[in-house]
Image: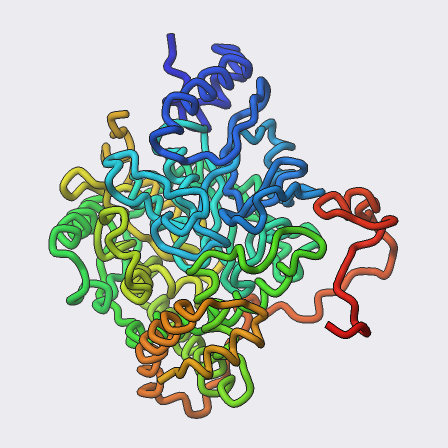
Length: 450
Length: 95
């Protein structure tokens, strides 16, 4: 008997089409899996006892009609959205169903999964370690085969980093590729919804399903991403892979560096041409990010006044309060030019770095994170230390280009993710590189012992 | 860098209540974070335009036609309404 929970999306679709199993059997298998593992992993906050549809986990910051949506916060502990996010409607039109809402750091603020008001999500490879965040539950649910695929959101790395810590595929599409309608807003100029999946081809399929304008997000491009399998599977011979020297410096763990370098060698063996590039404003990107993020957050959190929904503002967790305070300060009279405007100018310089680099290469490749998953509790006492973990992912939120994280090895039994960045709206090339690498390696076939 | 007094002022602007312990903690943590972002002053930002939006989209309009709306019940379903209205603090009454 097929172990249904091990199938990826494309295998599941084929299996259903060929009547090898039914949707009912599929849902039974996944619900049983969730029941077994959720007490240990805390990936799901809400579970739906479905019998139909391809089971998808949806990050609890994405609105699902009449299914409790908490955004990982006490403030929304009883919130029932009166509408579906566009991405949810689009998936349901493709025979998907929501098997559950996944745990996340409160209002998408964090880098480990530990800022959820409902307890941290545990890393399936080692439950004493963080899962990464803020799409913690989504990454863990996919890694633990508790759903076929999941949706997450990425504001500063929140799809890519937990995907890398959990050994699964995570795609942050270009900003403006997927409608944000129904996504509870954190940082309006960074927030991006994207898939977390068991394979690169799955990520491409989900992106095809969820992309394109809907008339409700005025910052969403009309142009959809269209999956074309021959283009996804095309060879990468001659493709130029940019290696940014600033991403291989002092902060990168030496063992992670070795794993990444092996992955780069693998790309070379596949015919890609490695090119050294420079992103000179890299050291300023994180500082710019941590001004813009809290500033926009402070504006977006203003709607939680307990009038139309939610409880009192006292119920915000400490990280959310901290960012509201920081953002309010940075935007206040006398400080706006010095902080927010200055950060916005540095944002232009970061974007220009990438524009220049992409003249010399087709994709930019490096680590997703300077380390593998750390111990639960280890960074909670020091907010700045936690922020520094985002150093390689935030630049593509500042500049808006797409980023993919794929499994590329292990350090001490913990997964390492390879980050592939592409030109704005060029998800096709980065998925092609990810696919080629994945097909030449076995990392994606390894599963945590649960 | 950030004084407790400044923390109090910002908390009022942000409509957040802080305990005295939180005020002290935030004064220290916010100072540390702002100290880190000070490095942006090293960057030559002369004649560079700020970026607020990477899509380049502007003035995205739709035709002025009535579309679907939430029903009154749906709009009120997450609060305790009074006579079909949201309940808020009085504007003209003394606090």
